[in-house]
Image: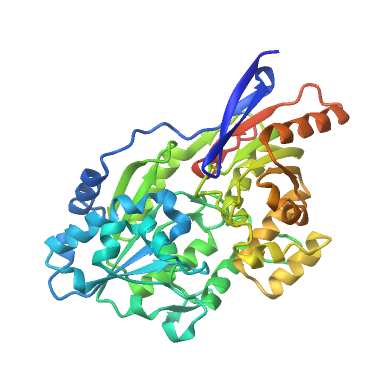
Length: 436
């Protein structure tokens, strides 16, 4: 039997496993796209933007400008490579460094360390531009800008609201329930209050109890997605001036920069992202290897949970998922792990509807999946006790997980099993074959 070696990123290292070639149905990877010259692409995008005038014509001397920038959990967007070019372009428009400031779009995440600030925006920017951390639970730092049609009271960071003009900076990739990241997400949840974020994200649940996850709020879906629609309406209340976003290729490097109108440039970016990340596949498999993609995408179980979504699409119900993530920051956020205390999905959904939070929802999504599949999670040994609480089976290596999976397949009498392999789950949109 011919074997094929696969290498998976886990944290800042890698692990190998050899799989039988005859059983491999598909290796799902995004379309290979070359990396760009980041400085040239950023300047070109700002000077020939989508849906608005060039940056230098939109900003002027005397403007107080806020740069809303995605936090350290999004450093896959490689923002440290291009924020400096945005700052320099503002200088050319007549806006000096002292008239700019940064607010990190942390949403419900913790405050960053000074070292993490550098990882997000680069050392030069941290020395030149004043920076603020966003604290979603601090009501003294929030101000109300309105209420959406869905009833979300929009409380936003006062430093962002006070700015004359706003630039939103992030990357674009598929998102578990908002369809795509970036754009309007820099405002809600990025710089929104805790209650605002929960009110918005509760639309990720179906309309009635027992139905679980809202099917309209899934990976790559933005049309008629209530979470997305609510976010867009919240952003329109603030009316940010400009957007600069990266799109990342399968090697984790910047392939495109989009800039311009905060909605139109973002929308065009989602189309590029879809073209790059869309991966049709032949069939659901008995086993899916689902790798989060290594650091920083697997920095925590919560962040790495994005790897489960494509695996949910590519695996037969009742099948096996081998998830791969280091989760070095396993307890971040504590509320996520603390949500795994239920014996059944119904009790968990009941409490989630009574008190919706994002970590609770993401935990619910995984808990439901552990009842549809057997999930082996390759992670650090010190995480094992915590992982068992999530109804997953912890393993120290991919090889160990594969041996357990093979034994399970043998017990189930599956000799002609199939395998799908997803080396970078956060970089694909798995597209299931249409029913004939």
